[in-house]
Length: 529
Image (cartoon, rainbow, N blue to C red):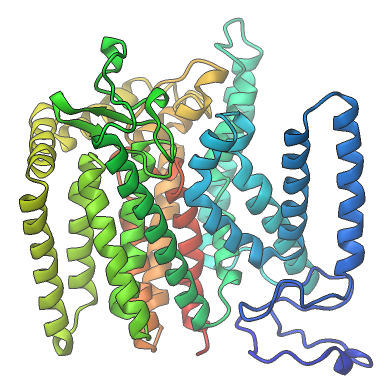
């Protein structure tokens, strides 16, 4: 499915049709895309009239808003949104890259620019994802390309989506017209459905986003650069908090003293908590909450590892190593137990999985580097390291994760609401403003509660099929660098897909990375150099 690297000039197409083998043609009247080395505005054919129509639409919208006494700032925001969405639709691949760039900054923009307005929490979808997805689907349909790119995934995917739609119609619909709807069940169901399956099309997007091996390296490098920027901001946030530039939780109501909250946000991101006398700190980094920041650090460890130990260029290997160093520092200072434990465990697992006998020295150096980092952390930040260890052991003793998962599963099975569950959105924290919900901190318990045992099994079959197809996919790769990419991506898919603790697949950024990486992984065998 890969494309040739050299694109014929437009003169060659005056008397003949473009070759059908191109993944995205630049034929007149089609939505063009460009390669990474080309400028977004190099393709002027049809672009100027397109931008003209977008400008006219923006002007009309601006006049309507001005006539309704809306402020200049709001009008500027809307015009920027229209132009970004229009360009993402016309250039789907660039729109997807834009999504990945915007994603780590979305929480900061939502709280510091958008002042926590709900629309700003949806901007990543409005600006990039939805228009890019629609633009890509238009191109694929016109070119006759496959949308469901793996035949073995089709049936599990259709079954799962079908069960979710049946649940929305029967369960949420029935609740909506009952005597005790407990909110707005239909709207809850729609939002719950969007959260549940909304990013699954990224499998297709990831497959067609990557056209050659350089695109995979670009993906890893982009994520490394984003991790460095966000981690430096995270360190700056930590310094501002511990030096008292940003206020701690002192003075808040008693039930807020040991929690992260928006009243104490600092520099970037959202909910933050700090109480030095209790050795309590929870940093959100650039995200909306410490939990989102934790999973960004864990996810970024995969990309940073690939770049540090697998990138063909030494400069990027050094950059990847630097990003790993920053990720591990933030895992310690963030105050999150999960990040503190998971980041080094993930790195050790990846080193073992990708090591070969001929590279044992690199493996040994990597283990020594992690050991040296942990030792340095104990020396430089003794109180922080001690606090993280005590917090982790204390939480484990009070509520061991295996016991916690089992308890949640047993409770859910007793309260599953029947064969089809309690309805979409009923176990989703993001829909709590729309009706009665139940906070479930394990993902499969949430699936059972909302969709019933059949829906949970259907999702488990889907991720298992994806795991099997990913395994077969990376085993077909002959290039050693791409094969290591496939192994690391496959491990990421397994860890996130089968993770029973908490609900990363319901939240950014993991929900985006998971499905996108799945598509990239399935593309690896067909990539050219």
